[in-house]
Every structure is written in C-alpha cells, then in structure tokens.
Length: 360
Image (cartoon, rainbow, N blue to C red; front, side):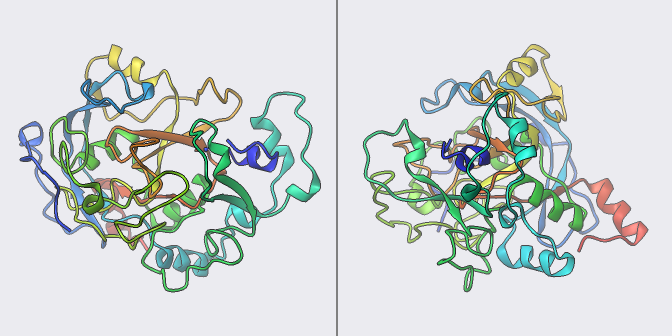
C-alpha cells in the first residue's frame, strides 16, 4: 500500500450490554501457576468459531465462512504497545523505522505490475500515510482521505507539525509490520496469529459480534468515529485520533482496545481463500495463517492481516470494531491509525526465564 502513495495512487467506562461469558469450551484449560511477563495477561486458549456470524449484517466477504478453531493458551499484551515503550526500544537499539527512510524503488517495484515506471524523485522521500478529513459523499474512493505526508513517522504521526509529546501512553502508530517485528524480536515476543487475536478479542464470549457482547454504546465501549465520516468527528468519546491505552474498560480476559483505537498487525499473511481452506478441514488446531498472501485487488503485493479496527471506524463505512473484522496491508506500510501488541507462549516465557534471557 505504501508504494501506491509514493506513486500518488493512494490505496485505504463500563461494559456495554454485555452478555454472560461462556467458558465451557476452555473449561479444562488451567492458568499457569507462574507469573507471566509484566504487562501481559493469560489467554486460556480453547475452541471457538472463527469468522463472522451469519446474523452480522456488517460483515464482509473475507470474514466468511466461519470455521472451528482451537488455540493453545498464551500471554498477551494487555494494551497496544505505547509510544514510551517503542521509544525505549529505539533508544536502546538506534532502530530507524521505515517511515524515516527514503523508499527503495528496487523493493517497491516488486509489489507492482511489471513495467510500472518509477515515481518522481520528489516522492522518494521519508514519508508515511496520514488521515485527513475531507468533505465527500463518496465513500468508495477512500484515497480522498489518505495523504502521503513527508516527515510523518512514529514521532510525528500526522507530519512535521505533530508530536507525541504528552502522548507517551498512546499507542505507537506509523509502524510498519517490519518495524513492529523488530520491536517484538527485541522484547522476545511475537505477533499473535489471526486465530489467537480473534480468540483473545472475544474475551470468553460465545459467537458475539463485539468484544463486549452483542450490542452496546460504542461511545462508551471503544474509541471510534462519531459524526459524518470522513469530514466531521463530533468527539462524543472525547478523542479525534488515538486515545491513551486502557481508556476504555477491558474485555473478559482483561484486554483493552481490542476494538477501536488502532488497527493491530498479526503474523498471518492475508489470503482471501484461506477461510475456505480452513472450513474444508473441519476443526483446525493452532492455525498459523496461509503459506502466502493473495488479494485479487493487489495481486503483486504481499500483505499481512490486521485486526481490531481504529478510531476511524464507523457504521457509515467499515464497522471494523467487530471481532471478526479484517484488514490487510504490505509489510512496509505505516499509518496513523495502525499499531500492534505482542504475545508469547508460556513455554517460551519459561525458557526465557530459565536461560536468563528475559524480555526487555
């Protein structure tokens, strides 16, 4: 997706009406006796139906067919990784994010149709994708509200005039999948798979549409868009863009912001055929995603899956605060509504403690 902006072709507190948790499908899963990593909660694992419910009228085609999945338990970050946490990593390693580097045409052209001409030199500068409100009734052409902004990066999410000063507890954004992986490698963590992420987001609820249940007041449940999208956010939830992590009540597993705030990277390649493959196999154990990426709309671009929706989500456009909602983008893409969180298996956590190589 990043290259489309380089080429000027922009591609894209209380629980609310909660229902009782149903723990029957993981009743035999026991929480580890040992303490887990700081800032993480235990996700017990179990069996569930992954994908959209038939009654979910806002679901998109790539959320079907729903299929049965079983995942093992794991530890997961309670919140999205924050600016202060990412800054600690950068200070310790000197890491430079992709948005802070000039694009490499030799790499970009691998994701484009053969024969695509190189962009103008003026576009080959450190930059990233930024949301800009715009008056429009055309919600199909979403490149109207995305701009390729020089100087936009994790320290300046909306460009040179913006800053993260005073937003240390906000989720870090403008991090590409490759940037997030560098951070997670440093911590000794990994991305959640899509199956792990969705299981965790459901918080122990069975076949519900949102992390908090079937219905509810979005203003009190998640950081989303209120008002006419994409031109006017009425700020009923008090936030135009990102909110400090844990500004809203957690789900049944103690996880914050599994709906809204920022999209979150997962480990899985995005493949529009993958759910059909899983469905044909019956119960799938610990799925790790497809072997390769495939999106008929971007056939040359390998893409990773994202989950959770963001502060831009609205029922007028994407409704992606639903637990089954999916998004995708190339590994080198950063946006000002895109972040991540990490996970680690219990066995890997124990091994790190035994070897003395603890997470940072």
